[in-house]
Image (cartoon, rainbow, N blue to C red; front, side, top):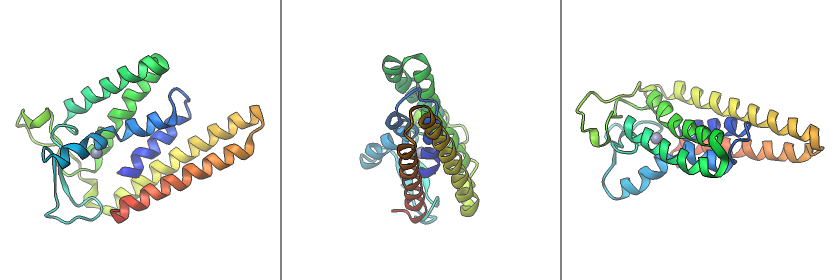
Length: 189
Ligand SMILES: [Zn+2]
């Protein structure tokens, strides 16, 4: 769901409430923080079912717990509110937490309620990854929706200030980035 998260960031960029880089980072914040915890052995990926697209069971018990994700979203929102105001803060909160919601859709049941799975309750995840083509279709829908909203907003602004070529190039660049993200997702590179 690497590309799908970026698709949502592209869609949110149309609101102009926060810069594109902040939207990109916030939609991936949980996975960004997962990397050092993975390297440190605190969180891990169980690849016993395979290491292809969506085949791993991800034990990200801190970054991808429901309460952990909400706390990270509030922290990101507090950072954003200082820079881009209240609406920017809420947008960054939504983008950060959207990662958990989209992951809930695709992950196998490996997402806990409390950090460290302290609650011991059943793990969550609807497991769309078990149908690779269905989850690929969901990602394509997200990046298409994101690209359309991003392009529409860019061209609408360009009709005001006469920069249609720039809008075209920025939409093309966004499309290339989203497709590259989808390819790397699918190929696991
Ligand atoms: Zn994730």
